[in-house]
Length: 284
Image 1 (cartoon, rainbow, N blue to C red):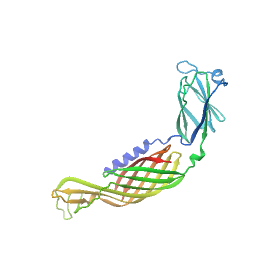
Image 2 (cartoon, rainbow, N blue to C red):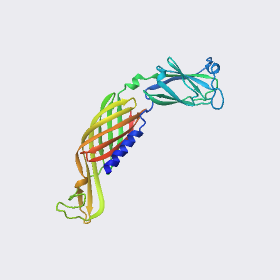
Image 3 (cartoon, rainbow, N blue to C red):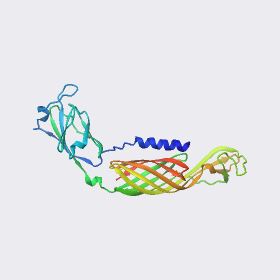
């Protein structure tokens, strides 16, 4: 039952990730007022307040692959290499949306004026898209025994990573009991109610870029998760039914937001104990 809730939480977390991401490799070259362009005056549109609109001419290759949001009035007009966007008087920003690059909000730095035409030039940064990136990320294992560690990776289209987590608790025990608190002969122990756990995992694996801001990782390694109960006479007994040791397997996603990165994944020991793994770090 515990594993069910961990897995359900991971699935919901994955579904909540902003897969569109940010426009990592789409760059603004320039934004300027076109004094002599009469488009906004010659082909007027009016906003909801019945005021004449401003026009932003967005210059970008494959313009039809983009949509635009914000105070956009009416349909966007597309020409080869250009999108003509009518915007409400006083608008301060434009959302630029692409299936390839994600979503970028561009702040004009000024309020648009009615019946005035502006030009926004965008370009695709191929060097940024193909850059080899280094990931350095503190991580937390979220389960019945929390643990803390570091994930380091290098990836272009393909790459790899290594990750280690530990809860900094050395656990020594005087014996063993079952999950029902019995010894090997079936006799019952009496417990104080105090417990202690230990968690260690060392994993490594492959990373793969699914989309410009989104990476998949999967790997394996070795680890353990131990649980001990204290008896009323001060002895510590290892709970054999809640102690696992052996193969670690994991998979997850890393989302890059400029030079920051977020991760969410699921990890299992011996395919009996499951926990979530989350992290936040840098990716440059």
